[in-house]
Length: 450
Ligand code: F0G
Image (tube, rainbow, N blue to C red):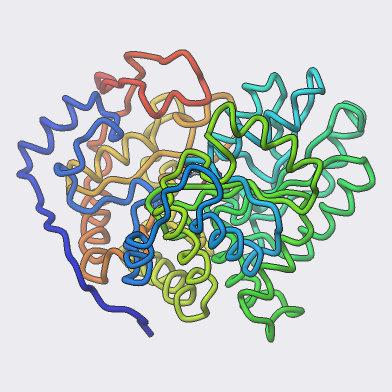
């Protein structure tokens, strides 16, 4: 049951087939280079691309732009405390700013640290590596099986975690991260029980336990549906319980903060808070604004409260599930169960004639734009070189933005692409940027000649 209606709309249009082909060439077959007005349905990301509520727009007008101690910051502090259970908040311009503040603070003292995570998102991986530490993924075995029908494929594998620590020694592991939902494992949820166990393990080895909480409300909805212990709990109660196991969280407000920009670090540890503040001043701004305008802090405070309302989050996750069903109905190789923020397609199955070295995921991304003006993103061997991940293409759903007709267009597009898949050629990298963890954002590609 949808719990909102549109008050403001934005015009979109589908460029001609010739224009789309030309746009792809000019973008060097990297859809990050496409101008947004050349895209019909934009499923590149769910990050900062959603629609805000009228309450959020009203909060923008009441934003307090004081450099220090603004009322907007106080509203954010109180929302983070009520919704997430943390007393100390350090705003940052977005999630990766928060990652820099927290991981720079936590990893600065341990040379050659090793950092386990259920699965590192690309900016997390890059920030950990940027601190001279080694990011290691510890997903459960089912995470990379697009067909395994398991409720919590986003979980951290305790066995893998233990193996990492046995291998390098507990002293080398000052930090354990868990990402909820697990974006790089197809947006799959993490159970509260798993979070609890990872927390216990982190305590055992005296490591700081951090939750990447970007999509904490979507995760809580899955917990409510799938974890018996929580079937009677509210989304807010689940969120507070799960996040409560962390020593600190990093948050991108562009996801379950329901805003176009912003993020923060939050903790109940006064010492960690003090240490983070110093680094925040250096990179983000005075710790009551952290690179954000007061009005954006105010909108995020409202967004966090909206994100945990039952009707909002049920609409949200069920819309993504319906989109997944529409795609499955046209025979698309959909990763199942559908995650919280996106539908993922298995490009290796869609384009079996292409080897990993010809980037089947990126070839599929280009084909979707060419056919229907749809923009998705590759999260396979192009985005994650030298890792053993499936060839996934992510079709992320912006919050409160698209309707069933839009998703039907995408399903039609996928159907046509699959019917003609044999003609899709592979790609090779033409220009390779300096930081391998970030190459998919800016690398140029060209088609491999048949
Ligand atoms: N952690 C996770 C799990 C994320 O998904 C993201 C962003 C970040 C951290 C960084 O946050 O963008 O505000 O700096 N994910 C976006 C995506 C970009 O498309 O999945 P940010």
